[in-house]
Length: 319
Image (tube, rainbow, N blue to C red; front, side):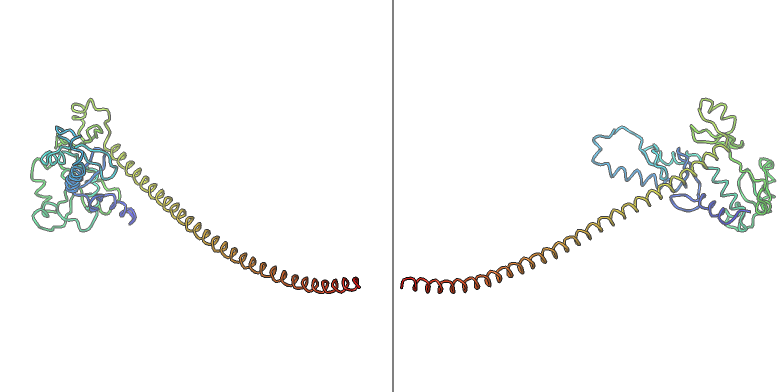
């Protein structure tokens, strides 16, 4: 049985990256990323309106005869060209290939739950517990709808599975029926990469014989899984790079803060040293001045005594 972590991973895989809800009518863009049809409709209108409003000043340079506009894939940002008018946008959206791989995963998950109800009864507002799964119609049936289902000649050959087996057995014989867009009664067996569509082998031989890349549905699903894993790794790498950028910005900010603190400390120490030198200078000048005064006073006293003595000597010499 699947673990809770596997169920969580499957739930995340089946969520549209625009509305973050389980896919409703998943459509594939040419880059193979899938979104709900309603989400794509809203995104296409909002994206083209934004580009129109942001390019008013470039109208003189634009080709006024162009009937095409473009959007960017919300996931990989690849450019996708679409028709300009609203009716063509709707037709373009309807013409996008359905992602039957995701549809089948959603169906498989839903029929494993105990609360799965009969799909035909649900369309009439009833809630009857489903007991059978029709692989061809990809619908869950209650006992009465199963009986009615087998009454019609065109439906008698449909493959029916016991829902209890699918719920309780990990390797239940579950295979999704993907119809060919041109031959709805035939199962699609290959995927044309050039046209981004699944088809039967007859269409592959006749309509896609000149296409360069034809894959089996298993290979296309594998490529889709590889793309998703690659995108997950790129997202993880982007997060790591963002963390490193934030770390270096923080170090840069810390370096600037440290430099400012050191400069302030140097200024403070310099001011204190200058103040101390000024004090020493003043004290030295005062001491030098006092010393000069004392020596001068002593010298003046000695000069006075010597002058008196000289006067006495000169006076006696004259007599």
